[in-house]
Image (cartoon, rainbow, N blue to C red; front, side, top):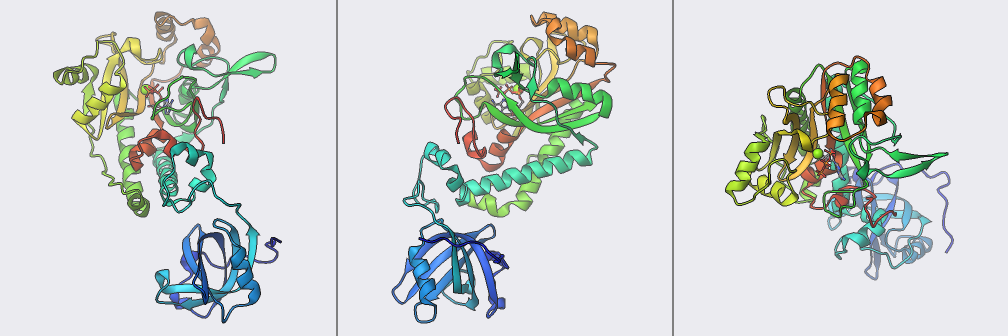
Length: 438
Ligand code: ATP
Ligand code: MG
């Protein structure tokens, strides 16, 4: 089968712009073939583009033999360009169709397809991820990524409106931010380097230069977890703010969450409908539970977590059921939070750290940071870390102002916005222990 070239043809209309009012006009549309039907005297197919779908109708009596031949050779998902006339038609979707004058087949999809692109035949997640480019043409996955896009867009707009500057910090680093266990080593010329776990130390240093910074970038975690909420590569929205405390940046985070939820609700009503997801905008202020209170609430319901331990997933889920919606857990034990979190003045066993939870899912972690070198060195030692390994960072922490910040997982945020129960649903090409392709 001879395929056609685009040549001089350019799209004149998107499918959604083909309207009954334009009846009689000649247009060129381009996209993928979805349903194909042959009713004897008439052949149809649906053309899908970024704007939706439009029906192409070819009555055998009035279109050329060449057009009919081309329609016969079409397979679902093939890419075509159609030059034709807009016609009103009661039976057609939206009351309008295009009668083709000429068709170009720009690419032909091999059959059988690995997935039903209409989504009528259910496929398991692995099959879908293996054929992700086809999966993303289905309404539900497409809706998820539209929402993710608008979430990120509105988060960015929000941070810019608050005077934050967007920065990019290196993803190839010499040492760990948190602990050595979760690092991916890579070979870097004559020596070993690592993929960055977090922009933490860089953004802290940058508060001394730009006061308010944010970064949207990948974080790499070499943890061997196989859960529905962890990947080995995730995207984090990170902020750091000078002359601020944990409570200040919690307010910023609250405002951002409310803004993002509201904007997604406003801009993505159609997509939320496709996902059958009712989105409720959390109300400010979000409840703030101390770590001790969280333990108490859990114990009342028979879930015992020893003091000084991180909340295991079942406990997080239980707490999510008890509190519901968005809430903060604050005042964590110093020993389970990273070395750069500021201990509380009145009780150094606790620190000024917080987690933002959404129905049992951790969305963000943050806190007041240590800005003075002596305390930072003391804290490193207390955590059993060698200050020598942080020498270049410490050298670079030159008269840094008091500051606070957080890291918010964009993938987890998208789970909350779409109701997805597996993080792999909301990441285009997820990376986990078993999956490194496509
Ligand atoms: P968790 O306790 O859920 O494993 P964490 O406390 O290790 O997460 P942080 O280091 O606090 O994660 O990172 C900040 C945010 O980045 C998290 O709240 C989460 O939204 C996101 N995040 C961290 N690790 C992952 C991961 N492996 N996969 C997806 N998102 C992640
Ligand atoms: Mg955390």
